[in-house]
Amino acid sequence: MPVMIDTSVWIDFLRGYATPQVARLKALLGEEDLLIGDLILAEILQGVQNDRDVLRVEAAFAPYPVVPLVGEAIARQSARHYRRLRKQGITVRKTIDCLIATWCIMHHVPLLHADRDFAPFVTLGLIEA
Image (cartoon, rainbow, N blue to C red; front, side, top):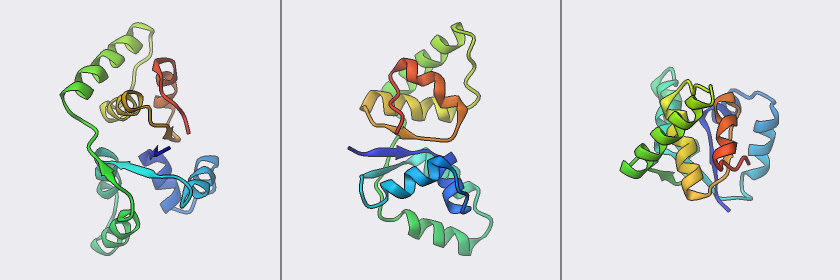
């Protein structure tokens, strides 16, 4: 089963941090189909400091398929998820996280993350990897 890896985990991995999520990612490398969302790729590349590192990061991600995360259906459902959580007193801090979670929910793809904003989406059907 493919697994979406969130920016939060990729950043910790690229920085060499030892977290439970990085350990899980390392276990998944070569074992599972890993997906990179286009929005996740954009977030990662925005954080790269110089052109040399951009080339290194792009090469590291080359083996993995990049999937588009936003279209009309995802945008509409993401807004519904946001409003539903807001009614429960939960505010998702980033629109991109809401879109990523919604894509994963709608495609039944587990998400590996290290970001507290994804936790409320489990009640909406998010599968955590």
